[in-house]
Image (cartoon, rainbow, N blue to C red; front, side):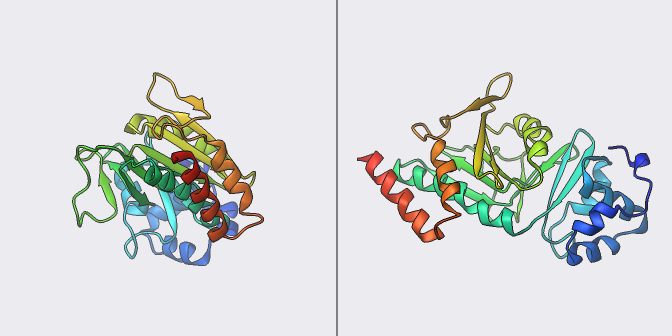
Length: 249
């Protein structure tokens, strides 16, 4: 989407879907950035790195509340968060971290962390997980921005899609591959399903067995997602523990 095509001062679609707290924060931006900010909620829009950082490159209270922000190929996109998104967010986290624990795989998990290559790329996957031996990790006290010019990228990135499935399977997949992420999971929250990719080759390959967590059948994630319609989180956690205990002998 080119900004010149965004003819109204504020997108009707954006205004209708944005929580009031976000809209209020957008309206407090410098006037020249308000139009760009609203456009970015509707899709990828051309923007300079400096304008992206001014709009969404900082965390609260300086930046926009309850959003995730992406910058790729000189375009930006900002996504608001909601209940369905947060509800399904914990399932892939539980599967990955419990499986790693039972199989004695070292893991470091980050929720909504910002991955940044200053001037070029930025993203905020719902979950970023380092697995195994990592050479360079973010320093303690480095806030929520992981500088990928200084640190290794996470091993696994996970996105939860409510209304952004095409985006998660399109531009974001290319973004994560270029950042050096090895494996990428996309949770279709509405269908209670998972689509996963090995990003290590020349092209992204869809997978049904995890590469970075050897032995993990990714159908378990889909089954755990399905169980959210019938069970509370404690029951799902116990089911996963029992399954992984049995698998680990």
